[in-house]
Amino acid sequence: MAQLSDDCFAFGGEMMAVDQALELLSGRLHPVTATRRIGLADSLGHVLAEDVVAPFNVPPHDNSAVDGYAVFFDDLTPDAATLLPVTARVAAGHALDRPGRRGEAVRIFTGAPMPEGFDTVLMQEDCKAGEGTVVIPPGIRRGANRRRAGEDMARGSTVLTAGRRLRAEDIGLLASLGRREVTVRTALRVAVFSTGDEVREPGVPLEPGCIYDANRFALIAALRQLGCGVTDLGILPDRLDAVRGALEEAAGTHDVLITSGGMSTGEEDHVKAAVEALGGLHFWRLAIKPGRPVALGTVKGATKGAAVFVGLPGNPVAVMVTFLRIARPILLRLMGAADEAPALFPLRAGFTYKKKAGRREYVRATLARAADGVLTAVKHPRDGAGILSSMVESDGLVELPEEITRIEPGMIVDFLPFSEVR
Image (cartoon, rainbow, N blue to C red; front, side, top):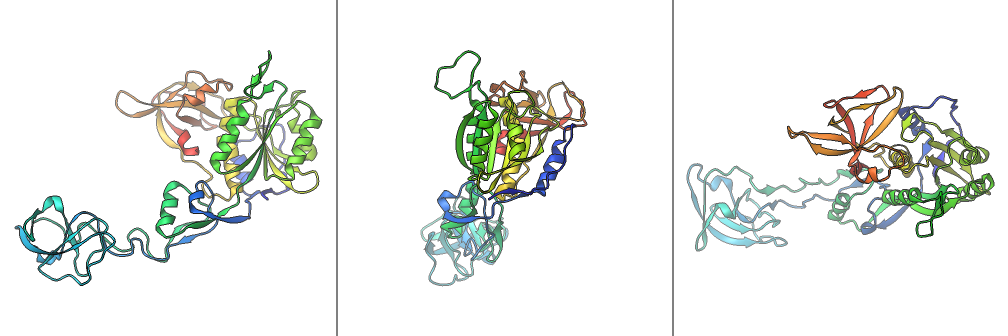
């Protein structure tokens, strides 16, 4: 089971910086240790639990990169065309049954093994074929269009390392090594709750003052995208006993509990109190906008076990931003993944913006080409924490560090594309 060590670091009234929180977490989060063997076709998004070493060269033999003619380079006239007899034909999956001979050319096709001795391949488009002959123009370089054995992967080399989340290209690479199965980390078991008497399931009639539950559905989708095993535990009412009972029961059978809403200090916000009664909070207020009430803690199960607790804000934009920048690294760490931090890309700002010092802020933005052709980040016109459509209509987030207080057009900013955190 994923664990968080019990030595809770103290946190007072001041808000904690994002980087400080993530740094403190890195030494306290312990990945799941269980592994399992699964079919290669089912491994997309899973975290690799083994180093993969190439058992043979890929490609296993020298082969042709094009359709054309294989020759000895030294048979070619450097400054004039060369006429050679075509004595054999080699297709992919078939090898010539003899070594090559000087003074001959062999018709060869893409992927076909290079006959012994031949070192250069001419593209058929560059040659003039005759009756049993071929005319080869001058100017080709030695070794052209010849793929070397092992140039993709050399026998004995480590081609994938444990901790990698498997992508489509990784699966293709494993298949090229003849692998049908792979050892991966067991998926995290994550329970997801929403809180609030005003929250309703989509599809039911909406009473005055109520809203449909967007947060839970967005979180479940994001968790499944990460490869987590998700249990949907629905909407918790605004009662301390109900919140506490649900968290305690789920903690015994899950690695992680994630809630949205209920983390503030209002009279109807009971999640913080329930977690403190069942285990402890390690932090619950971050210097981040949107999303200040973000919590991490531990919840003990009713009879056994404990789960890592992640409490996210109630506003939907704040939920998505804090999931991407806080919860996602936590989950990846627990999954044993090596790629915890997404790449940020420097872009030119196309907007003016003021912010408070000492707080990390995330601005929703789209990408556009400026008049000079340079890619520019353009702020979404609406920036409320409840405007979920702004996330749909944006390409990513501009991350503004604590020390920045003003952005002017033309300044370089860090941009996080949503494609980086899928």
